[in-house]
Every structure is written in C-alpha cells, then in structure tokens.
Image (cartoon, rainbow, N blue to C red; front, side, top):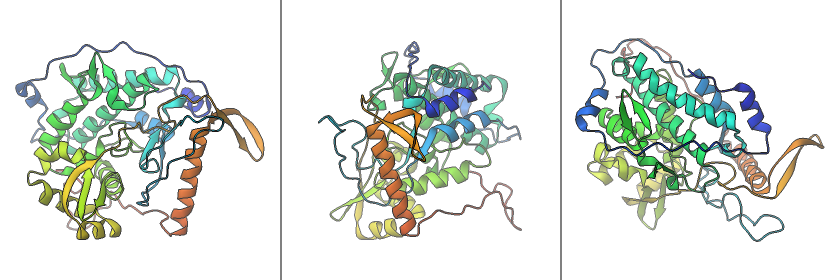
Length: 377
C-alpha cells in the first residue's frame, strides 16, 4: 500500500494555501463487455485472505468532517459574505447533513498520494484473487476503490461546485473509465451497477458509495473492511434515509432521493412497494410517521453541490482562528467559519433534545449465531 504522508495530513489540517495537482486525464474507454465483467462474480468457495486498509482509514479520520444526524429541518439561506453581495460557501438547505471532505486544505503531496493509493488498490487485484475473497472482503474492496477514485478526481479538479461536472479524458466523472482492475477499464458507475449491484442482493450496499455530493450517502470516517462493512452500511442507511436528502413529504406524496431510481432495476423492481419496504427497515420514529401519512415514492430529491466545507470555491475573505483568545497562524474562509458555527449550533440542539449518539454492538458472537452472521448478501 502506498504511504499517505502523515506529515502532509497534519499540514492539511492547518494550511491556508491550496495547490492543485492537475493530473493528466485518462483516455476514454469503451464499455466493458458482460463477458469481461463476469470475471468479477464472487467465488462460491471463498478463502480467508484479508486486505489492509489502515492507510485509507487514517486519511478518512483526518479529512472527513461529520455534520451530525439530520434534525429534518432545512437550513435557512445564509447571509452573503461580509463586505460583498456575492454568496460564497454552501447555500443548500441540506448543508448541515451528511459528511464533508476538507478538499480546500489539501496540498500537492496529499492529492498525489490519492492517485498513488488508487493505483495500488488496482494492483492489489493482480496480487490477490479478489473474487476468491469472502463476500464482505470483496464488498469492502469495491466500495473503497470507488470512493478513493472519487476523492482523488474531485481533489484534482477542486475548486468545483458540482462533482458531476468534472470530466476525465472528456468524459463525465461517473462514466469515465480511469480505473483498471485485472486489465478491465471501469468507471465509478461500472463498479456500483455492473459489479456490486449485480452480485449483491441487499440494497444496503447503496449507502457505501459516495458521489462527492451533499445529496449522496455520506463518506464514512473510516475505511470499509470485512468486519465493519455491515455496520458501516447500516450506519449509512440510517443516516441517509432519516434525513431530508433521503426522504421528504410533498402534500400526501413521499419524495425520495434520485439515487433510488438508479438502483431500482437491481433492488426495487416494484419501485414504490419495494422501496417503501426498504425504507421502513431503517426508518426512525419521525421517518416512520412520514411513511405512514404519505403514499407513493417519487425520486425527485437531489443536491449536486460538492460535499466539502468551502462550497467548491476559493473565498477571498478569511477569518483568523483563535484559541483561548490568541490568534493562531492560519485563517479559514468566512463562509466556512459560518458553516462550522451553524454545525456547532446544531450539535447544541441535538444535545438539548437528548439525541447525544448511539451505541453500536459489533463482532459479538452469541450461542446459535450462524457462521456467516454479519455477511452482506
């Protein structure tokens, strides 16, 4: 595995200048044939090999910021930056949901190491029989590879307001085949739909894939692995379904995120019936009440703005950061300061309402548990 420079990670947390490493785009590739993709079908006789994702785990813990659970309250439109009528930063009503990546703090070394790590994950498939791994191990591999590739390309293109506008080799990011596994060119969409959605039956896998947008499932603050993949997917499902960017009401109709339309051919053939059953599986008290008083399921909710802290722009106005009344050696944009203050206010509201967190039990074996307990089907 390549080394994600820890010193650079520490600098990223404090740096104010952003240097972009604009890597040469990969050439567009034709769609892989189904006969080629058949090689990625999971083996019926898995082995016990493991892949170590500790480096990516360290990166996520340092670069991903959680905005906390949804309160199902749309954020109001923020005031323009001081001294200008121009609106910098995030304006989305969903800006206090999900997680954010600190793209605006990344330097050349960190961005280059993302590309190095993505290539190393690709090469792992030349050293390890991916298809012969356990199903959870394979699933963790594909989710991590997809998300590493998305972080890498967005970091290369930043500043950008909407990741869906990024092009790699003249092709939009989601369909650009810049990922190579066992000699087969793949796009992020190929990994989701033609490998994972095709070979896994549980729609919870939807919540592992990060699109770089506020409206997508959250990027988790830890890497996926065989032991935690079910737990992290459950966390992602709970977070997304019980948020405004996942489910809302319009009159007596239920509106849902557009990502469910993409997944419908694989998991929701009878769309409204199957999706509502899936949502019910993870719905909290408020969402259960929402499902009970609405009908249908209209895939209309989308938010394509970048899931970062700065809103995908470089703001010219900065705020000095202070600690114990003493100014530190770095500054952050005013709009980012305002977002983080909103986040703090939200957390205070969560505490006031008594929603201080959840306790998750994992890897606990009980008498009578099946051997494949925790495996994502």
